[in-house]
Amino acid sequence: MAKSNARKVREKQVREGKRNPLNGRSPYALSDMHTRTTKTKKDYLYRTKHKNHSSNYGNDGSFCFC
Image (cartoon, rainbow, N blue to C red; front, side, top):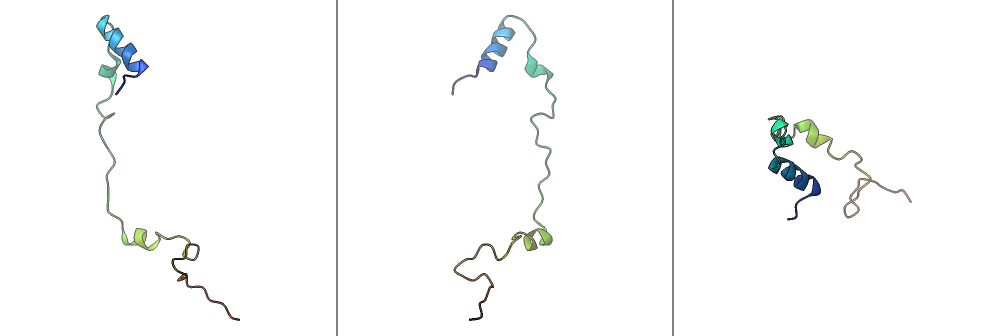
């Protein structure tokens, strides 16, 4: 892959003896702090918000009196 212009500028500054901005990054910048949980029963129940809007093969629960 090609290098971005910002990366080229950073590498040039490091070669010239200037401070590397990557050293100033927080140790939490690259870590994933999100805790993943499995879906609860309520999540599964409310997964389909509008039940009659998407019908699969006509089984949407609607009926017609003619």
